[in-house]
Image (cartoon, rainbow, N blue to C red; front, side, top):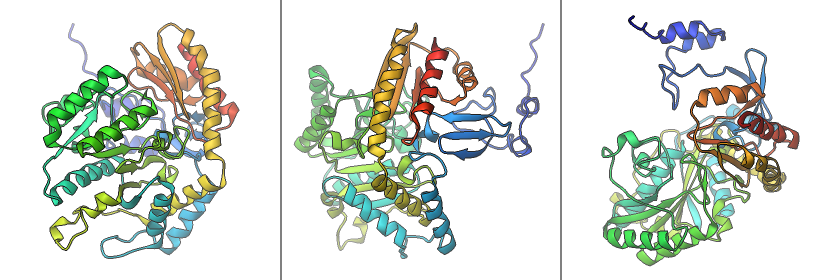
Length: 432
């Protein structure tokens, strides 16, 4: 018997109840991280409120991942909404090439004041991947402008820095989602994080071998996020700072995930007392309201571009960089960090996650449970069917999106204890 052809995308979607707008657009929207032929259709969200997603069929879900870690104040915070509304009435956007506007300049000043050391020079873009590419470009061109060699980046296994071509090259080449491109991308230098004497010795050997061609060291401080939610000690960052100084390399911290309270401090680098040469920020920068990113450099990096030679300028300029609406949202988000106890809330989430997820350690199939700030991770030995697992979580009334062998929560910092308990209970119930 000849097996029948799988139903077409249009036919499969026709069998599922969904709003007209989703039905009409489903054949045209290319979804992220999804095999379009086999993936189930996404859930239609019609409204958000606090930590809740309201679906078109009347269901309400507690969001456990804050829309990829962005909605740090929850959804629809009135202070951010009002700031964006006011800015929209005045001026939604002007180019930063030759023009200036208040929101971008105020935001750059405020970010510089909040970051440690002399991280004072802010370059805006519109996504985390681009922010990391700009950081890499700054590190390389600063050397070129000074007449120095070195154009490769040292990154770490287990790391993730984005999906654009240059950032794919500094993600984990074996375990990450970009393994298909192995050998196609620009070849960077990979090593293990220096978490013990053996890995530190190996890292030193790698740097000594490649010192003549390296420009920078790139790391996600404290937590390697999308690469597997792997944690490391703050001492690792001190070690990397010392190695970067010893070998004259630029140290880049990718805080797109870890910034703005996610690890319990405003920025992860503060827990190590280390100032990177360049830091990248995005995701929670606008409180989850609109796309915006920033690459922020110390004075000695900026000074390498300060020249009478026009060729020494940083030739980069995303069209919507410093978008006025996004900057208004980011300024309002910073207001909330200053007025409301976000860091204390993150620390309270950490305590509750410790209390409520530790029971998962006793479950069959669980390899590890780890907590850092407002990040709770249950690592399994394997997940055979992520779609089925997510369906069971949905039945518990929560939106939790497992990946690889990881079930995790990164809720809004404003989540109420009872809502957080619903998330942790759902994980335990489903895994047990």
